[in-house]
Image (cartoon, rainbow, N blue to C red; front, side):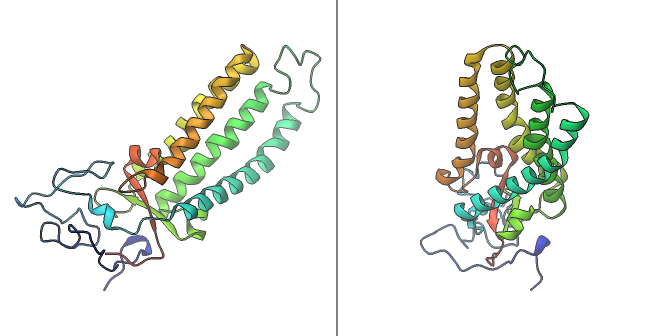
Length: 242
């Protein structure tokens, strides 16, 4: 039996109590949706939510990644990018932009929240994580954190297919750029214009947390919000699947 792309295994035991698994309506294929047909001989199409009128998405038969390992991979990736980013960007900002010699109008200028500091934070918290994740997902389908925890990002339709270039860029763009735009918008308002905009920073931060935690209660594919918009799922790369 040949190995599928990216080294994922292709066999998993049949799920008990799942009437759609292995039924004539869907059959078996390495990635599920690419060859499965409905009762009328038509190939079904699934949206990023894994739903279809004739039954659940074949992606639900893939070995979905455990939430605690997904969280561990995310923390590891964020720490790696933050350490590298601050080590690279902050000394440049301090030396080249003169952040070590603040002016006398610190209150009017937002205290330590100068434009260079905001730019450094946006670079480290948004741009660098985006590049870090987009490149690795496009090449390997997994980041360093996901590789360490044995996880992989694949497409929902066709189920289990490796990411194309657009999806590999779009998923981290949502995850690291779109999520952060609201945060930095309210942060700038809070420190430069209106103090009470800090409540907007808090609300956006809570919203971002919920977007990640969405995978805990999402069914049937355990997708976070960015997975839903990108049409992706995270699978356990240590489990054999078919």
